[in-house]
Image (cartoon, rainbow over all chains, first blue to last red):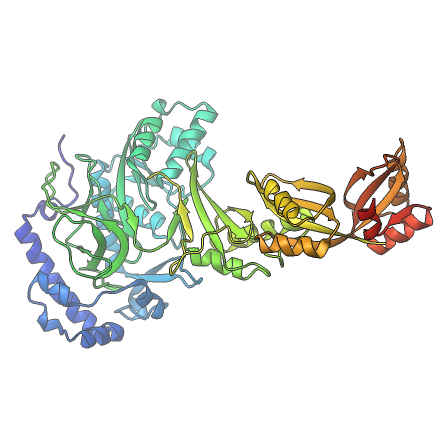
Length: 436
Length: 143
């Protein structure tokens, strides 16, 4: 198979050349951030490091980490490095206390993003001749618009169908002859199941490849999607803080890992407990430094995603390092049907309900292809009633409040007091029964 | 004219009912009547016992969620139409039954109907007016 590159020269640059590009950009970034963003300057001063100390790529390790709390502390625009009149777009992701994380983009950032996204689409073999069915949600979430602009840059046709309305999506796929599908993997399986119900033969569709991301998914799920939709299923990685979709992308040559677009996003793998950079190939927390972003650059941003870097050359010819499929997270954030759920959000709802004790557990399962969430609540004397309708009213209220807060429908399960395991120190709030 | 009833929360898992009855037996508490309300996810056990306070104490000590509520015990002849006549009186008074259950006393001559109403006072008045016999807690336990 001939590899389709979007920017062949940089994508296949020998490592030494790539590292030289990275170093130049890193020096420039650190100097600019130090000069323009007070919180970064304060952290660097506290760590006793100046921009002039960055002489090699290894010196990156001297810089302090940036964490999600830094983003929240400077909500909404405190870490932006340019005046707002240069910011052409913002996106946001949900936060634990209702305060989202806000990210901003200059015109050039949008160009960079569209470029890496076009590269990602090319990795999946897409070209300007493709009809690209973009079922990622449009809105504050980076998925929909991020992919959209990448498709336009590629010169392919984008169908901005967004999420939901599955029947219409299938009609569109049939009538418009969609060739590439962009969605969460669980939604792809929903589409497949709906096709079976509607009697639509996926072999009669023009779909060739699916680009799936935004939620964890297993190799088993990949096989299932490929079989049910009769397509090749590839993995995309991104997070809004770093850019959005298009930070890393699997190519068609391998199922093992995604190429990180390292000329823009410099990866490190650290030990999440000590913060030390781990030897090549070891598993740990993924950390990114954005080398080219203007409005909202990040230095050593801790993603909390667990992965490892694959340094072996890839058959596709790209020299960019690969990251393994994310196998977990260092924190307790759950992704349920593509929605970020923090146990603390559930706790927030429960604690706002009169009589509910601070003992609860979240049980996540996968029924068929859908993630389900059950919240187990202990029935205290204050909650208890001898009447079924009163208890059912309570469970419905909690369910509705969680739906309002998180946008996720859950099942509320009342359990006897002291049946939820009390742990010493950190409570085990989450039981994830999904087989990844 | 009110009878105290013990209600216990039951998680939907095997063996819980047995544990409750064993706890009561170990403490020499006699169950006069019981009913279980069940949904797909949980159940509520309702009991009339000879010692309400003691029962509540031992069940709580064994980790159960317990509540005490007032119900009405109506004694009727154990013959066909006994329950129907009570329900007719309730309907006439426009009362809403939350739940009910029944048992037959040892002599086999009378049946006792346990009712839970939203408006207890109104129910008591209506049943007395129609000439029904309401039992006290002691009377229920003495049966």
